[in-house]
Length: 294
Ligand code: MF3
Ligand code: CO
Ligand code: CO
Image (tube, rainbow, N blue to C red; front, side, top):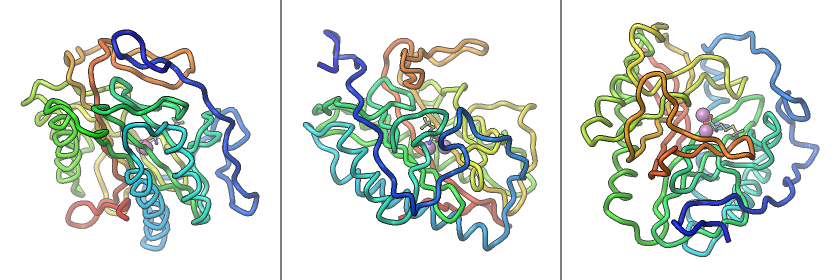
């Protein structure tokens, strides 16, 4: 039903948007076509960082709850329900719900879906790869995290892509230090990915996060030098969220992805497998500290 003859994904049926009690404060963009312009900067004081950490913890714990439910036979809509209920129970608003019209509480990106897969009645099958991306809004702050998982027993190719994408994120985080240019992050990620012949998605990036879901600060996952030379400073908060693909690496100036007619789901043009991992982090005096830990 939700796969074609080659086993590639087809859009499924999307259930109605889930309800959030009106007692839980909503981000300003909910009910609007797009977020208001963000004027603030990307640096936060210690109290604000703790508030982002609290949101990040809720998102990370919701991710754990979803991970425990991933198995062949479950639908991505059932995973959405688990994350939604977890966040609401912890007084958090699921940031994606109503963001630029996005209809669901998390993103579920299966196999060739690079990012922004919409939970629907797609049934997970043994051997699938799924990314779960969760952002929680609590006490005025967003925390944004994602991880990829194998469903049941996966091929070595799939397992390797998952492990190496997580390692790519880890190398990106280790490249963070005050005084360095933002572009060192993508350089570390891309040079690691290239060892395995993986492609790095260029058109979707990390971002400043905190008061705003996407602040305007862009964190490339490829070597963008001499561009993206903003100097990292203590207190800056942003995500790193590399998307690696098994297919042909992208060439400069080309976009080797397609978007479904739903206006959200981004797939590799060659329908090859892709994985992603994401953390929200703060730049410290010595390096970086992850704010999206359970
Ligand atoms: N959480 C995603 C990110 O990492 C953004 C999802 S926006 C949505 O930036 F609208 F697609 F949900
Ligand atoms: Co993000
Ligand atoms: Co995210």
